[in-house]
Image 1 (cartoon, rainbow, N blue to C red):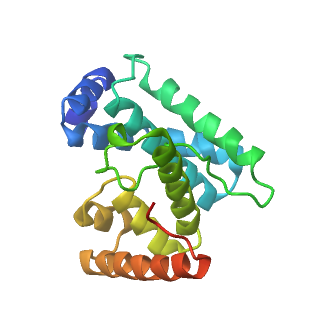
Image 2 (image 1 turned 45 degrees about the vertical axis):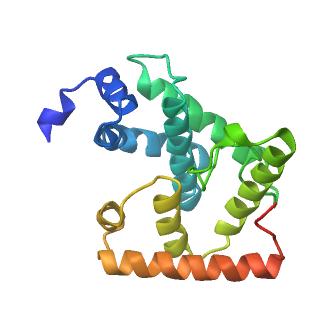
Length: 195
């Protein structure tokens, strides 16, 4: 464990950008305690803190993958700034409105390439993703947790199992029920996921 901690953040970031997924895992584990405490101190709610924590790393991953990170050596302050902005967004929208912005920050179907979409299709796709993101929040907490880890954080079921402390079979079962329930919710809301 101590060996990993000797690697500077900047090296881990460049390794991750070069394709080493494990480097990001080390970074998240290294900073999760401080970041979680920082978010919790502002929100004072465990579930919301976990949401903001996850959303922070979704944004971190997207920024790194787009090659837009340029604060070498100052990873933690940068991540804290992202989470701070997400906390502010939460408070702005906390009066019974969705906690999440309608941006392309969340892309469940990350395999789809935005480049080929025209402006109108892109707006429709972003709205669909925002709608789905909102519906995910209606799932039971255990199902929601697994679904987010799998779809937003791209974690393997093995990693999900380790992170949640349940067996791989339980994690798979929760994912299956999450998708069944999500389909039901989509049908109830009569949301059409094609354009």
